[in-house]
Image 1: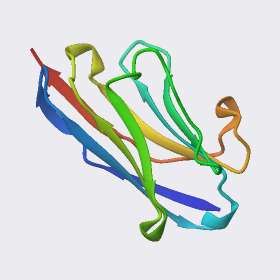
Image 2: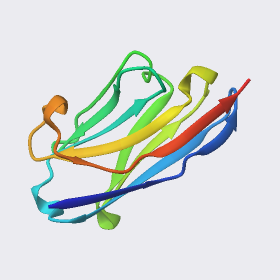
Image 3: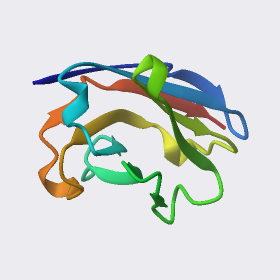
Length: 119
């Protein structure tokens, strides 16, 4: 089992920045793939960024160029640096991890951290 705890959400102005953190505990050695997702009210969950065990990253079109996924393995922490925030970035943000890099089937999820962006 893996437990995840996100933090760092809050309010930002349009054009501002936030950095989200996700601390993992439990059987962290089983984790190969890590990702950030978000879900706004009335919308489907959206995959934003993935980071696999080889260090390969991938980004959605909405995240590319503005968001950066990174990790600090010494702290078992995953980050999402979000720059140039837009009002449409407002959502609940989740981190998720799994031994296998198939985001649709990620088994371990955090409880989410809320991000709001004012224009």
